[in-house]
Image 1 (cartoon, rainbow, N blue to C red):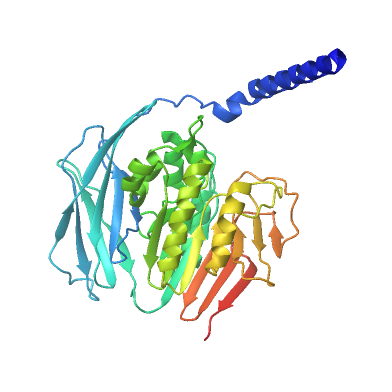
Image 2 (cartoon, helix red, strand yellow; image 1 turned 180 degrees about the horizontal axis):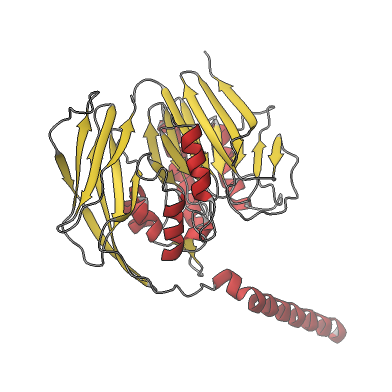
Length: 406
C-alpha cells in the first residue's frame, strides 16, 4: 500500500514539474507582449478609413489626429452625373476619443455621413487648423439585389511588405467591388508601427471602398483575460459602443440582400457562448437572401482536427439550423474550401494573404492550396451567389456557385 502511494506521489510530482516546465517555456508565447516602441502622433488627419455602419444608407469615416481632442467634422457633398454640378456642401460633426498605449497617445475620431442616394460622394476631414485632401466614394443602389464584395484573409504583413501591391492589383482587376471584408490578423501585434503598416497596405482602397473586418488573435494583447486591444474597435468603430460594454467585437451588418454576421472568435468560452446566443437570435430574425458568417478562427480546421474545437462545437449546429450559405475565416495561413454536399452545412472558406505559411495536416477537403497568397470575389446577383478565388497575381484557381429557387 505504501509502495502504491509512493508511486502516486512521484507521478504527481513529475506531472507538476512538467506543468511548471511547460509554463516557463511557453510563458512568453502565451502571455508576453513585446514593448511598444515610442511613437509620435501627426497633427493632421491620418489612418483615414471608410467603413460601414448599422444603417446601410450611411458611411462611417474614422481617422486619427494629434493627442488632444479637438472640434472636428467631415465636409461632404453629393456629386451628380455632371462633374461640374454638385449639391451644397454639408458637414457632420465628429466624435473624438483619446487612447493611450505604452508607446504614445492618439485621438481617434469617427463621423457618420448619410448617403440616402446612390451615386458619387466627395468628402474631406476638417480640424481647426488643418484639413485632409478630398476623397471620393460611390454608393450603389441598395435595392437592386446586386452585391459585389471581396474577402481577404489574414494580412499580418511585415514592415514594408507586399500587401499594398496585392490590394492595388485587386482594385485594378476588380473595380466593381462595393466593399471589402477582412478576416482578422490585420497586424502582427497591437502596436502603432504595425497599424501604420496595415494602413499603408490597404491605402489603394481604404478611403474609397468601405472596409469591414473581424478581430483576430493578433489584434489581442496577450494576458490571462483575453481582450481585443482597443485600437481595433476604434478604427472599425461600428464595434465601439458594444465593445466598451461587452469586451468583444460582435456585429451584424446588412448590405442590400446580404447580411454579415461578424464574430470575435479569440475571446474566452463565456463570451463566445454569448456571441453564439446573439448569432442564433439574429439568424432567426434575418430576412436577407444571403447570410455570410465571418470570423477569424475556422470552425473546421486544416491544421489539426482538434483545433478550434469550442468554435466548432458551439457554432456549427447554429449554422446548419439556419442554412447559412457561407462562412469566411482566416487564421490558418492557407486556402481551403470545405463543404459536405450530403447535408445542409455551409461552404467554409479559409483565406490567407500573409507572408507566413503553415504546415497543414488535415487537407482532405474539396479544395486546398498553399502555394501563394489569395483573395476572393463574391458576387450576389438576384438568386445566384458566386465565389471566385484568385492568387495574388490574379490567377483564378477556384469557383463555386449557389443558386436559390423556389
